[in-house]
Length: 106
Image 1 (cartoon, rainbow, N blue to C red):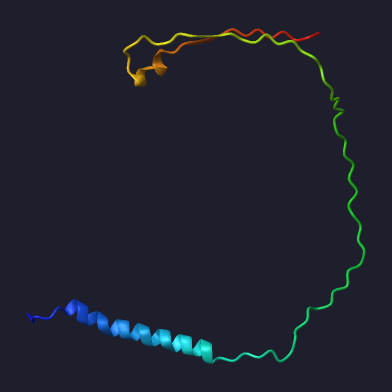
Image 2 (image 1 turned 180 degrees about the vertical axis):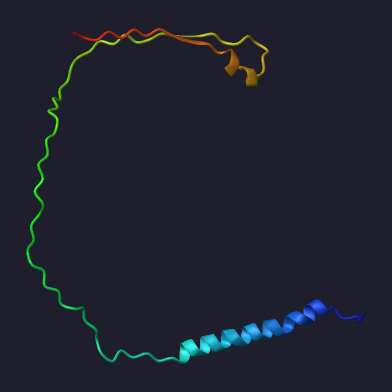
């Protein structure tokens, strides 16, 4: 085995090649001269009048209005957990009771 590390010496040609390739690309871009010799134009298009399709649509008769309604607000009873219980168990011990009765207005 030689005392030189072959991994660093084998990368040197690749680095030099990359720098040379980059220099060639930059040189081609900077040394290229592009001049506009003639302006282009879009083709002319003639459009004649057409006719929309005829459509017959029947929609539902919808009546919109407002109506006053009395709503009984529900009561909520919460049973709090006992003291000394851990915070993770709080959600398991909360009971929510809601009584709601809705009657339609005639």
